[in-house]
Length: 439
Image (cartoon, rainbow, N blue to C red; front, side, top):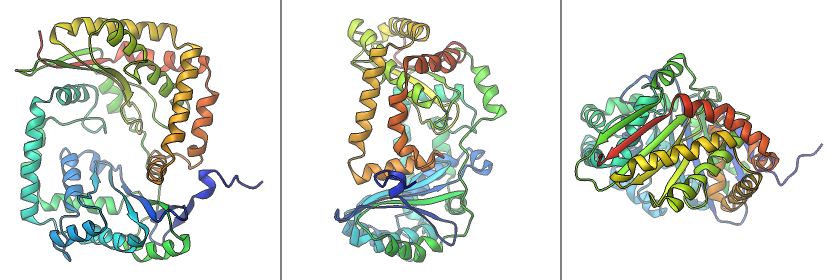
């Protein structure tokens, strides 16, 4: 049986270089540009247990294009500027180092050469690092008065152990990490990522697959050899189970003087991740609950009927790992905190008891399906979607099956997911974090 040539799975050429590095190539002739995403993934325990890793990862990403052993910072900046990529930087996280860009097709060779040089010959110049540390220290200090950030940090620290990808460090810890940060920390992190378990590049645009494969062999093919293996994102450990169980139902308060408003975050971790068979049902349920501040259950009650806020939402916070939190977020007048909490709980109790209606399901599925179709009209967004799919450990076929899975959902499916995943999480391990002016 011949594959449908219009599916993403059939159009993407998967190439494995001699060093184990993988390339996912989707040619789109005539567009004259290439959207690409480079990703180095590693979730080894040696990284997870390092309390400084997020700071190290962030600073490494910022520093990689600030000069190498072969080129000065200004030289690299000029080369990037010539490609209309001024300010381009890597995005460093505890488990990943990523780079995304859209370039003119004729610049691909130059771009890959600069990227390879940055990764294999990093300069980590001490003067550039000192400047960057000062800039980030100022940014972190500003977080001390950011009530939205502070409420999120308190919540994450209550719900998750330090080894969890959902854990967040507080500003004082970040400032202390910045003061201790040295080039040796970044070299160690970068080495770990370059030898990571899952290393790949996604390219969507105007190129010849055979020519690009040869070019990748002479650039990214020079990175250290390592067998490609799909990273396990389960993040389900005994420590995680125990930590969430002990968190129970908690209310946290962070007083910030001089604020005229109060930020509230309510989160409860679902026992699923992106690969779970109930993910689509949980996604639809979450969007019906709080996906849109005007039309969702929470929006209609708390904003429209009660008039307690200008906006309220409920969203998944990165479903890549197990126990991803559903977070309800709202900003209110300090005098209305209790009213808002009562109103939110009332909506939640009805949601958990009665589930969603056929009309809500039909409307939300249509919105999601249409949103996916619109989003995938550009090469850049297709590239990002392929990257997300690979990062999350999904098959490429899921790019084509996601909308079909949404369309197959019925009320029974969604309401069963609510009973199985939302209800026990909300009732047993809901954390409410309040930050700002507190009455």
